[in-house]
Image 1 (cartoon, rainbow, N blue to C red):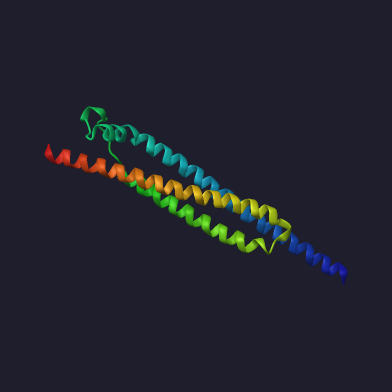
Image 2: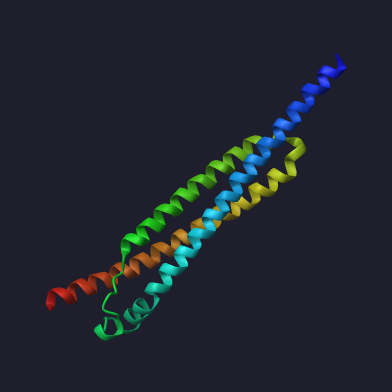
Amino acid sequence: MFEFLRKIMNLLFISKGKEIKTYKSACDDLVNKYEILLKQISEYMQENQLPLRTFEQNGHIPENDFPEDFHLNTFSLLTIKDQLVEITHECEDLLNQGSSRLSNYSSHEQTIKTLLTQLRELRKYSEQIEGALGEFEDKLLKMEEVLAENSLCN
């Protein structure tokens, strides 16, 4: 009888360990997605930094400061923002899963607490980046309006 109970307990412990590994893997995947998105954001902002800076300093857009193939590509910004929203939702889902599992997996409590702390930090960064992207988008839209007005006048 005791041998049977021990086998059941071992199976439950192994099963819980696999669930924790799966959860940790999902958290790691999310962090990887986030890092890729941060790289995309950085590249996008760098591409548009010079024209935006020139516009903000001068209030207009000198034609000779832009390459012939320059365009703002606001669609890329919208795609980036959508990806950030998806990552944020995924982060919130993992936070909820981890919070509910914390009480069920006392033997892995520290691991889950660490993962939850990382997810909360990721969520906080997402909010900050979302705000920065919104400000950047507002500036780009103002610049796009001026570009449109200039092309209509010509």
